[in-house]
Length: 626
Image (tube, rainbow, N blue to C red):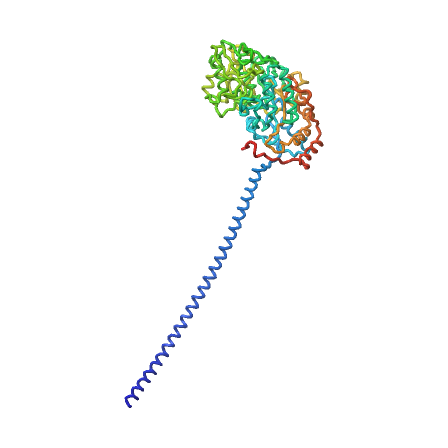
């Protein structure tokens, strides 16, 4: 029993000791717990701070992302709007200001072109048209844009007769091109819109012109050309503005100048009292001196002194007469022409003029695979006057009969054959010179080499071209040693240069200066007959111009009598036809458009433009303008 009590005592003592120990441990645990809680609280505070910082960063990122998203949406909307506009333009056409392009140089059919354009714009504004005037570069650039169909609006241009035959005026602009002649039946050919014609196409007109060109009966041809003029008038194809009896003003020291109604004027008979140099002022520079690849009169004015064709025009007339050919005789059907060439003639570089030289030139113009017919050059006149290139040309071949005889073989008769032969652009160049210069032939660095009365000396672009007399000229040496053709762009400045003695002659003065010249004892005025027409052309890429009501509104808006009084004076006359009155085929029965701006407004309203016209639409289906 005592043992049990002793054990019990021992156990209770141990338990007490354990409880005391546990109390001490509990205090330790409590202290540790407090420390842990404090540490946890600190960690929690740090965690909360990190969370808050993260939230702030996330909010900033969200805001930045939202801003970026807004910018992306704006760009996408803009792109969508642009795409929509492009899609609308692709279907409906681009909108552009109504523009009138005016020429950068004075020409015989448009003296003072800028001032005339300003007068036209004032007339048009009075009739409900808000026109923007634009100068489209220098003369070569302007002609190039016209050729490429890139003058999208109204544009000023004109034409001077090259051979006196109606075909030269009308067929060049409104006849069939090579690409139109599909199949063997001309009645089935269809005239397509072409860039160089302002995208105008009229198959009925083109077919009549083709028929007239192959008809040997002049009275029948005349009736066809008169019908063409009426058709062009009724269609308001273009607005014929004026014909100009071009005035040329000379110092009284000058004699012997021959003004040609067609082709280049003749300088070889000019005499200068007290001198041996003739200086002629002109409004613009030449484009090129290879006449086969140009269409501008300032180029032909120069090449006509250097180069010659097989035929030329009788001085002062439009009659073709022999030049480098002594004669050309046709067979009964007029499908073969045999030309006897002038012997003993040399080009300025010493090359012989003969049958080989003639064939070299005509083959160069005729065949597109000829090594001297590069794609970079445009042989416009050959294509139009001879019906096309390669197999489309009415000239099937030019054959050598002997050294001084060639035969032209035609696919059909061609009524103006001799007149075409005499044109400046079919003048014969030295084959040696062309072979040596290649594509550079006719440029300022090379000039031109022919058989004519003057030889090329120097071309300072934009300033002057100098020619020297050819003492060995087959027609006799010129009476003047040197010819200088100076560029003086401003009309009044040319007149002042004449008065100062810096030049001895020039073409086309302003009305006031002409009156002064006529009253002067030291000057005189010579006129060239009006074988020219200044016109205002429509680009038919413009949708609004495709509406004849709009074109008629333009026709009634221009006060041509006022333009002629102010800028042509007594030398101008209103044009009712493309053909001037001096050329047979002119249709006197065509009734002129009256000047009636109120009627123009009525026609515009009827066409859907009651508030006038200031903006036009480009037809996306017709030719690129890039």
